[in-house]
Length: 224
Ligand code: GRF
Image (cartoon, rainbow, N blue to C red; front, top):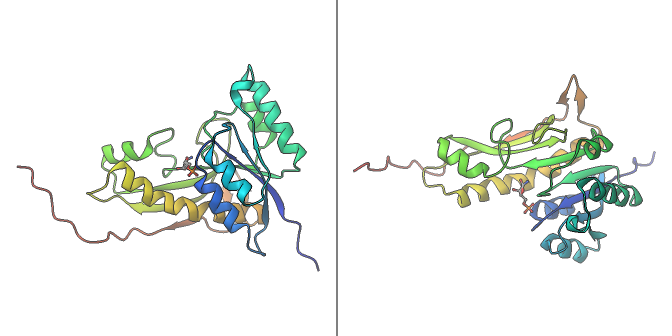
């Protein structure tokens, strides 16, 4: 019996595209259930576009500033996705809010990666806010996209420890390493059909990972 056809994936980016690269690398495996058919950016200067082209992947820039309204921009984006026969959309650092119309076109087929353990820390500046709150565990989430921001059913999460010595940059780097691990895992779960929505929650395949080992016990800082 022949293997089921791979799902065709578009990755939407606005910047450096390190999550994009982790998905491209994972999709090279013969048994990966998805292939990267397209990288699309709303910013023509996104570094990720060149990285995708270097991998011989179709890379399209659709500058949102060239469209008078969000709807026109999204209709152009949707047409490009359809033209490339896309089955699944992965948002990876795509910095445009999406309208309910666009989200509806891709309902159940659009993933996003967020640098926090949702439902905590929706929105921007997640690492700064986690440090300010003094949380001890932080991480990242891959979820299906719904009209509300950072709110859809959770496919996969990974946890990291927050260290006393952390700055937003060191914490971001620890979380980013986990992002690069769970996005391919989550795409595999969704593209293969191992995970699916039951009663509004993603079930199947397991989606938890993380390492909460603290490198070494740190002494309490002096308050003097
Ligand atoms: C990542 O931290 C991701 O979680 C967030 O935007 C950042 C994109 O980074 N949504 P990159 O472009 O994938 O390197």
